[in-house]
Amino acid sequence: MGKGSFKYAWVLDKLKAEHECGITIAISLWKFETSKYYVTIIDAPGHRNFIKNMVTSTSQADCAVLIVAAGVGEFEAGISKNGQTREHALLAFTLAGISKNGQTREHALLAYTLGVKQLIVGVNKMDSTEPPYSQKRYEEIVKEVSTYIKKIGYNPDTVAFVPISGWNGDNMLEPSANMPCFKGWKLTRKDGNASGTTLLEALDCILPPTRPTDKPLRLPLQDVYKIGGIGTVPVGRVETGVLKPGMVVTFAPVNVSTEVKSVEMHHEALSEALPGDNVGFNVKNVSVKDVRRGNMAGDSKNEPPMEAAGSTAQVIILNHPGQISAGYAPVLDCHTAHIACKFAELKEKIDHRSGKKLEDGPKFLKSGYAAIVDMVPGKPMCVESFSDYPPLGRFAVRDMRQTVAVGVIKAVDKKAAGAGKVTKSAQKAQKAK
Image: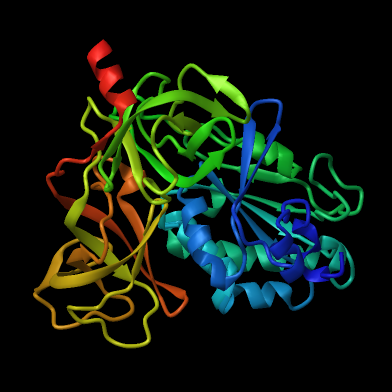
């Protein structure tokens, strides 16, 4: 094992490169069953260099489980001003450690920004507190994390805080005898209160989100694989609509159309895939060079996705050391796409709480400001307005290896598609119908 500080994630760290670094990098998909749900774990990375993977994975989640390390000094690093816990909590709600630049903070923020409104906090490594399984240390962490997540929009009363040891199994599946002072967690929420002791029970109390099956199909590609004997298999999560074998799909912005031969989830063939399903689907006559991560699949016959020539967005500047002017070109992380975009025009400065206009055509933006901006992508990309397709209209702005801003797309200037590639199987399928 060797890497003590990462030992709790080792079951998910399956790539050789990750093992050598001792860092959780790729987004690993693991499945297990509880008494109520099939749970797919998207292991969002906990290191700043890999935040774009965190953005991709968190934008696909129904609930964020923020794991905070209780070990001496570890919580402080995560929740510090630059810590990862903080950034993950922030990214969890827009989608953020809790130091100001800590990763806990960033993960919670990312989760919130990207629309993950349900949160569970696992206070991990309780076996490494001083003294071990310290109730005082647990309460101190709950207090600080609650303060932070409340600031970014979560209501701590609706969040289960569970003291755990992933290494020893305390409070993971069964109540631990090592923490007699912990009387369990309680949730107070409009959709029904809940209580329990373990992390497993907290997962069972997640409220299933409503699934938008009535909207046109939108499936952002997470990856595209070439599988011997089968062919090209794009993989991703159905965000809206339904994907079925026999359907002709169009991929934007590359404008390639083809027939879906089969759809699979966890190695089982599906007759249809619904919103929330992480699937692979086999497409005919399309090479892995034709489509890529960040592309969007849609039904060719029902409002297929189109390339965005530009968009108007509402952004909140969270963490930029200087001033942002028109022409600023950071990377936009939206669904599974990571594309450089230019802030072509700063249209309005607004109050980020009420949305009221404060100033027309501001000369610059800085941390704490909210604004309406016109953005132009540096390369072809496909996004949607937040009001039409919420999961595809939220984004994080990254620069200098951190989340500089978060936002939502208000309107998209769609580019009329030229003559794209229509495969033979697509032509056949279209004739047959």
